[in-house]
Image (cartoon, rainbow over the protein chains, first blue to last red):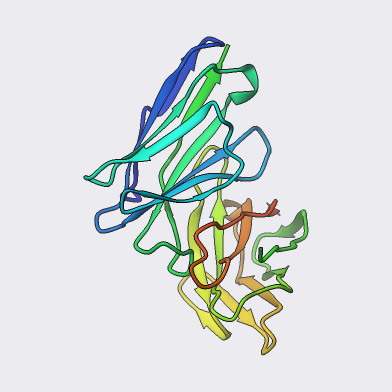
Length: 114
Length: 111
């Protein structure tokens, strides 16, 4: 157990629907990062939050949004889902806002859009 | 962005030492170099991190030359369970909040 909790582990939904993925960072970590990993692809950075504020955006679609709550947990909202959104979505956390102290990853949410 | 370049794949045999080199020509002064290991359908796992010279832990060693434009992850005596994708990661620098994972190196260990 890495200390980063992601729920749900698996999600199957239909095209056009909206889903919410949840992440609880490791205790003491202030930063949360979201990554998308499609089949046999590398990790694509989506967005980062630090202590409740958005810090960086990567290749995140306009249909996707995220937020970090006062208790530091984060949610990634995916709407108007398309087949191509099927992927593993990972959340990672770190104590600071940079990568210089390493990330701790959760076990991911596998999203299947049918 | 501190882009990294790694070999796409490597093969090895059990018991051998494996060295994976990563190039990061644009590394910034304050950046650390971090390596992660990822098994299929699992999140990446931190292996080792360093700034310069050599770092060693119970799992691996990391060699960083003086110019820091490359780094080499060394896995001693690999086993079948070391078959995974290995990512080299370099921070974006001071205040760098966005870190890009490259394609990684797919290591396949054979019996």
